[in-house]
Image (tube, rainbow over all chains, first blue to last red; front, side, top):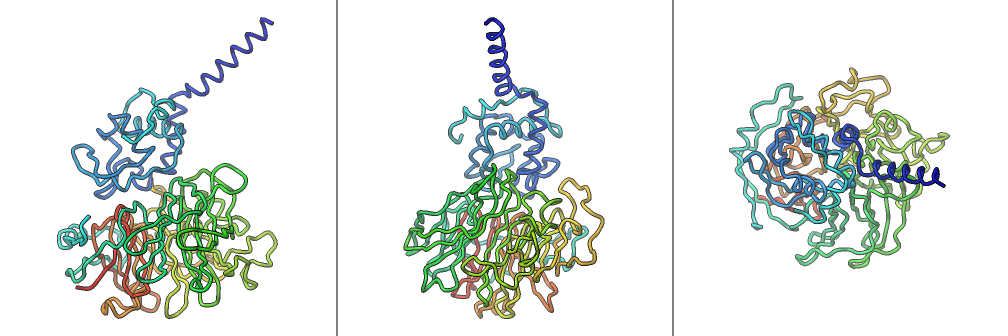
Amino acid sequence: MRMFLLIYIFSLLGIFFSIQNKSMDQSIEDGSMIYDDFCIQCHGPLGKGLTKNIPPLDSSDFLLNIGKSISIIKYGSKGPIIVNNKKYNGNSMISQGLDDEEISDVLNYIKNKWSNSDKSQITVKDVNNIKNPI
Amino acid sequence: MNKYLYFNILLFSFTNSISCQGENPPKINPENKINYKVDVIVDGIDIPWGMDFISKDEILVTEKSGILYRFVDGKKIIITGIPKAYSRGQGGLLDVALHPDYNNNNLIYLTISSQEGEGSGGNTALYIAKLLDTEITDLRLLYKAFPNTKKGQHWGSKIVFDDNNHLFFSIGDRGNRDVNPQNIELDGGKIYRLNLDGSIPNDNPFKTKRGAKSAVYSYGHRNPQGLVIHPETGVLWEHEHGPRGGDEINLPEKGKNYGWPIITYGINYIGTTITDKTAAPGMEQPIYYWKPSIAPSGMSFSTSDIYPKWKGNLFVGSLVFEYLERLVIENNKVVYREKLLDGIGRVRNVKQGPDGYLYLGVEGIGIVKISPL
């Protein structure tokens, strides 16, 4: 019985960690694949953006607001947005249909790519908590 | 929104006329002067992906997120009963086209990113349905590409008809370029040809080839988002998004291979090479390739007398540079390129209406109409 309880507790812990605590490295790695599939066409391999309506992701002050960053990936945006004191027509950012885990992964990747560095991990729960566009 | 949009052509033309290094000739020309106006006909559509005309005053428009509108009497009404779109990446509700005999049978075709069938993710599907006022009935799936995949890229998909009761539609490589486009036993990276009822034409090139997808008409394509039957010659014209610097115009012919990814003029987004070949035996050359890429979307010839100087020219939307490109074609060669409506927004679609005017789908706006002043 004691053995059974131990196995039970360990398996619960295992499930807990696999859902809640995907490692940051794994999240970033998964995020890089999402970036190359869904983001690179417009934001580019260097995260510099493109033309006058695609803002940069490298050294972007927009990423400092995590809630807004999650929201724009989850729901898209309407109307202009300001990035690094420059105005962009945000109409071209549309929801890509990513699930919450994919959104957390791609954000962790973007926040730590190029000259960006922010080791605080965005979790699936953080994304799930954004229930409406901000 | 303003009823009329005017553009500061001179300012934009100057910044864009600084020639791009390595541009594939002929180089793009700035517009000379403003000699037309642009009216917003249908507003409030984020991504007006496809459209077709019931009459000059009545338009069907798809919104990529999954809404089909009937625009009538100045209002857009949501059509009910369409299949659910798998809105992921570049996928969603794609093209809409009236059956050539729509006036008698009320049939329409839709291409849509669909989760139908086995496997997680989706792939491109073609449906036919009856349109009764603002309701879809008798919905029938004519074609569904497989396998389903969670990749967001390269779904195609435009629908056109030739004069011999054939329907053509396109499906892109679905982000699996090394597997799909060169294999005629797999979907993706193909132009397909069907009879109007969805059956396979007897003379389709791979109909009798064991294991092949019998609906395939041509292959080796990356992501075709422009198809048009030339209104005078009846020839099928296609353009496709290439990788960086490799967007192409092709004249797809039955059973032929257009080379992707074995040959291409483009390179990966990250700057690495895909192949060192731009030509190979048994693979067709494009009649033109855009370098730099304009991200072409939608294509139409102007054949009316409404724009005398543009008669016979080809018009292509540019998503990335946000203008409408006018191409003068002589003997299947592009001899002149011009930038129109620079800065209007991402031009998703262009079509000549039944009244001979050019209509554009512009992201964040809706449908606009170009009229000479």
